[in-house]
Amino acid sequence: MIKLHDKQFKLFLNEKEIADAVAKVAKAVAADYKDETPVFVGVLNGAFMFVADFLKSYEHPCEVSFVKLSSYQGLTSTGIVETLLDIPEGIGGKSVIVLEDIVDTGRTLQKLVHLFSGSNVKEFKIAALFYKSSVYNGEYPIDYFGIEIPDKFIVGYGLDYKELGRNLKEVYQLNQDHMINLVLFGKPGAGKGTQANYLKEKYNLKHISTGDVFRYNMKNGTALGKLAQSYMDRGDLVPDEVTIKMLQEEVEKNPEANGFIFDGFPRTVAQAEALDNFLESKEMQLNATIALEASDDILTQRLVERGKVSGRSDDQDVTKIKHRFQEYNQKTAPLRAYYETQGKFHSINGIGEIKEITERLGAVIDTL
Ligand code: AMP
View 1 (cartoon, rainbow, N blue to C red):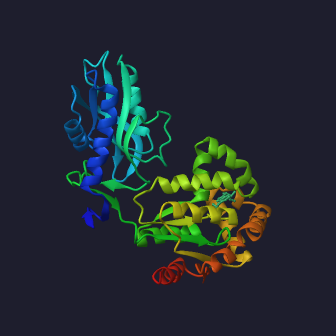
View 2: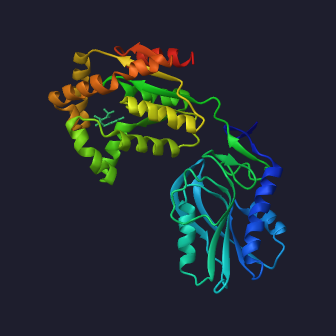
View 3: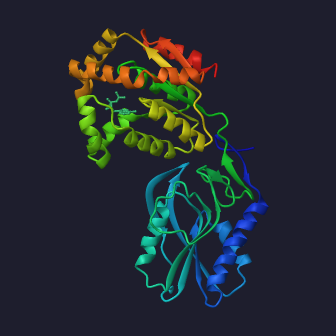
């Protein structure tokens, strides 16, 4: 186990495994290019070690150069990729093979393909040492790769966590053994969002509210927002397939999280099953589902008050509020039994001062 900044990492690939992967890529590329002089273009900073070892295993004529792009800040991809060092000159008519340390979502790759699309190279190929095939959603096929890896945040062998760890000879993965994943359960107005805001600070967790994600998308007029709008306006649940996919994307955006607070999800048994399967596929699990209990009268009062300030149309109309309670009773309430069977269901009194309720929640979480 090693520590970089605030995070613990555990061994994932040893030197031999990495060397074998590098040799595998070099051999595959050599089979295709040994009769010409290709230009290998390393992507800085992460690929420098891969490039060095790759070249040592590539025993045929070749040239080497570098480009530099930036997209990672800390642990999560920012989504914005900048060009810091542009494509080399004099590559026209030659075969270019880009050497990437890791391909994950494919955003950096897309930018690279774009960078080179304007140059009149003979051929353009991508060789990645590590390939997260489960999260890759680019169109460009990965021509060569060393090892397929699961969606884990990794460091070492050129890859960094906030600039540390590049000099490690092995590759390490973020240690998630101490992760806490919670579902906050309860009817609309129970205080899930309010409490999540306190708990996320106290336990350093990432808060995902599906209602907030939908509202954000509606405000920004995205396709998802337009789809969700009619359901939300009526107080109906958005269809499971839409919500489940969205939730998974939100989790995947945060590979560094110490844990998640799911607020407003799951709301149906199908969502709960999907959540269990999804977490299992990431070697994660739910620790507890905690319900905030309050009577319908109190909840209705709270929602109407909130509607005055938030402007949420589903909070301003008592008929819609009643309909949301019905949706809850029919579709969400059965989850209680679902989690009781798993021994994960906890229930606390959701009436009182905000601080008192946070303490009641903390008392449950501290036993986990
Ligand atoms: P909330 O902010 O949690 O009260 O959610 C507001 C609205 O968003 C709900 O009434 C639903 O229309 C939609 N929504 C939020 N979470 C879910 C979910 N897990 N499944 C289906 N619809 C949801």
